[in-house]
Length: 272
Image 1 (spheres, helix red, strand yellow):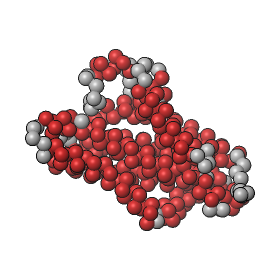
Image 2 (tube, one colour; image 1 turned 90 degrees about the vertical axis):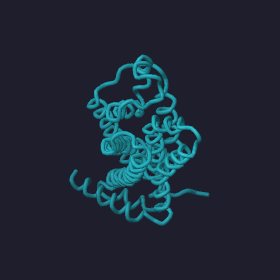
Image 3 (cartoon, rainbow, N blue to C red; image 1 turned 60 degrees about the vertical axis):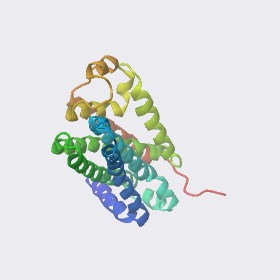
Image 4 (cartoon, rainbow, N blue to C red; image 1 turned 120 degrees about the vertical axis):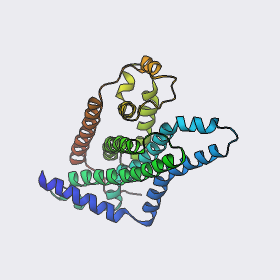
């Protein structure tokens, strides 16, 4: 087990060093700068508006806008990094060498998961830092330290659990892993997570992350009041319970992914 973890860490470091080409670095930089850029444009537009209503509305929904924008880039980054864990090795014709090594399959699976998590979380931290600085300097809203630490904790959990899910999908659906990952987000978090009820929406990852953020950040949703929201969606669990569920889902997806990558046979050559 110790050897596998050491090999996974070595794979993670190698993956980060070798994959940071000019193209990938540019993509990561664009993703990191997208949330603060959009937020800055909205703040600039509100400042140039003729009434103060725009600034007031923007200030009320700052947390929601920031979480939505950073959540979008974190998912895109994870999809780009986590889903090609097997397909990249098959296309690079290195799968035979990996599969022949003791523990090679599990090491490459865990190593690429760690690489995807590390890069995506780094993108989130840059975005969170720039957005917090922008909000504090232009809107003077809230407590910047609490805002930064809360978002850092929320997206740490988000990158962890979605990284595990997308890594599993990369093992199960080699060539269409990105498509299935996007479909999972739309079906589970957007559709199922928005269905009123006390049961169905609780199966979405979004529900657990949203409940944690409501405790750490306070009320920020566009609903009229928290009482009306609770009437529709029911009471949440404790923060500890939500964190345990997220960690449990992460461990479950990693175990399933490790089992699948060890037991599945992949075609290493294709005929035209």
